[in-house]
Picture (tube, rainbow, N blue to C red):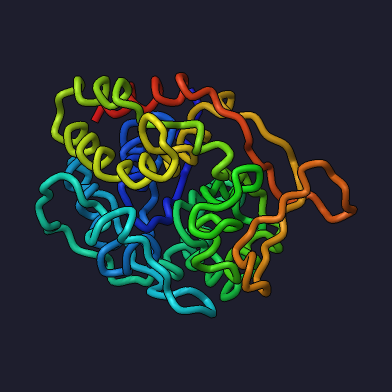
Length: 314
């Protein structure tokens, strides 16, 4: 039996971030969660740090260490998404305030120390929000870059366009300079864009199956997703909102659910019209170096079967 894959989850919870964290909690045989690092994004840092600990306690995982990171992007003012996630970021259920402490170490230093102390090529970075923490770690300690096994991220879009502007997906838009650092770093990247996540709709039938698990974490997740999806249902006219961030963890568990292509991806940082755009050379029409595996297709039924099965283990 192979040892569990070591991961760090870098996140800005967010209801769909919570679903990704829960998917990892339900998969201890495959994934060893070394720590959760939080970043400002969907809501400010104080709330993302609070929310990560709430999810840990909800799932009875007080052993997981949570480290607070960057409270603003590398070079811009923070843009948040309370209009989607609610004022707390986890609106929907009634949730107790966390009692487990935040770690005193800064998230950037935890990322650096962990990559230096673990064997090279054994730690995967799972980024669910803006890429600020990881970019700052790479800039502060470039020696860690070749030690990263892989960076699997939710972010960007190409064929689907954007969700915060016509051109940009939220995670990249919040800190495009950080994304530019990551995509220029040479680290192996797997990118889960809106092209994938918009195919993963939390339909009423799928939420019913989740609710039937009957546990407190599953019940809270259903209530979170019912709140979270109201914005996207209104925007897209779909049966359920798209579930973005769990794609990162699902890929680590069942990569065969996804199909994509190794491409060049560049980040737009200058244009007022398209800032935050992920410019994907899907058809290889340039000679730019291919720097990311960009996913485009997903087995939606297989994804939700995995999600529901693993939620039931918590």
